[in-house]
Image (tube, rainbow, N blue to C red; front, side, top):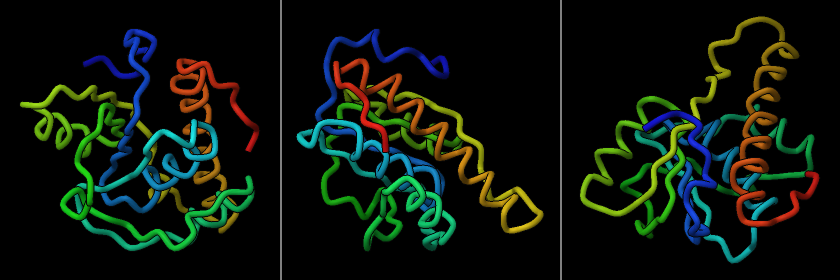
Length: 159
């Protein structure tokens, strides 16, 4: 599957979307919060990780800057999901992409890979680290607006 394949290739509007990354602590919960703010409330949106992880406080900070919040949501693994029916899985890390392809081997689920930088590898001042998180947030927001919202005819709201 080619990274960044345009979603416009599929005419079906997804009703249930899963965002996946390694530990569901940065990229996938960010994508979930952003997608909830942009897409139709009737779209079921959730996120999960391949492995267990701990909530990252920098995510709360950069989401709060654009008026979003994870509220009390805690990281969860695929095994902890209450619902496992999705018509679109968007993976944000190589590990998650491989896991999603394995999980969907016998299911008709569209899996799309959006390679997304891991901001935890950035070192430096607090502000430099926050800037890396902001870049991930802004990139995910742009992808969701251009690949999901426009596909579904939704005018993207500014967060």
